[in-house]
Image 1 (tube, rainbow, N blue to C red):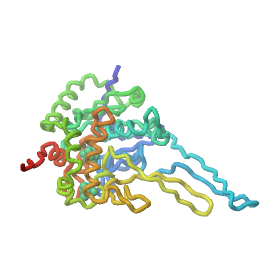
Image 2 (cartoon, rainbow, N blue to C red):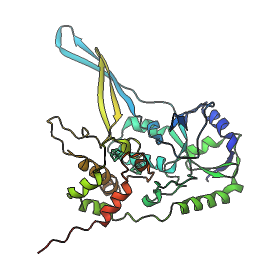
Image 3 (tube, rainbow, N blue to C red):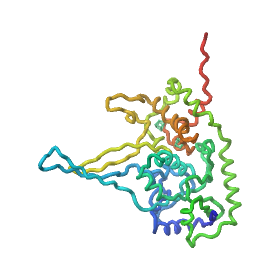
Image 4 (cartoon, rainbow, N blue to C red):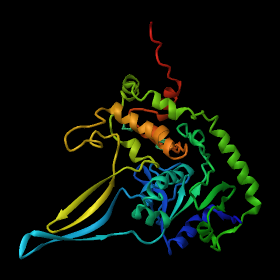
Length: 353
Ligand code: SF4
Ligand code: SF4
């Protein structure tokens, strides 16, 4: 049965300090103007009244990570014979992420369908995913870029989390979501939270109401396919795009990467780093041919992947969690919601006989 505990706001830092004795702990705090998930430091202020600038994506899927290190050696008898010793460098240790938002954590469930399948398991992703626990904070403030309720979620959604923290008077109600999350709730700083449950339920109703009515996106997959070849449509919606990639780097459900080798002398390491489908180089082939030669083709792919192609192979699930970061951070003011709605409403011009 789900454990329900209460923690005073003033006890959050001491609790995280306890957890930090056994886990790497990340919490949102400012780094300049950016609110980021940073290693817990009792001297830093933890900021919980707004969503972080970047989701905690890199706690499970680092911006750049070493996969393998390798050493070359040449056979002194025959220099054309090269031996390569390669070693996987798997991550170890456990991590707790405090203060992630429901949309952020739901993003990892979109990674899971790709990196943890029956046929293929990404061992690096799995090692971190299995050892990273999320204490997710229900959203108290809704921004005009939030639309999680359009994509089957809500501000108190616990999908993918281990503990859900709900703001209540004086602190937070902590609900266990998974057994491993329950193990984080053994501190003496926590007290029984049953008496706060009603208040927490009311909070969740109110914030869900603050999001306003959800738009129906059920037709998005087929309608986006219907405009697939309509480059006039895509030229128009992408006209302002600067191809900066902010939308992909800040997206909690974007999981593309590139692989590079770095070598010094006879030693080297293989790195995996985030990649960005809005960049012209993303699909550039060695021959010089680029199947997505314009920003219109690239934006079509980004929107189509999230709202049409991914749902087609993953049981109708949209690969967007409605966090709104791509809208908030786009320097050109491109709004993914408007593009999807425009495709849904698009009517081809009547052909004159
Ligand atoms: S596509 Fe935009 S709104 Fe959707 S999850 Fe990514 S950043 Fe958030
Ligand atoms: S953030 Fe905006 S301008 Fe930058 S690549 Fe994305 S859509 Fe284009």
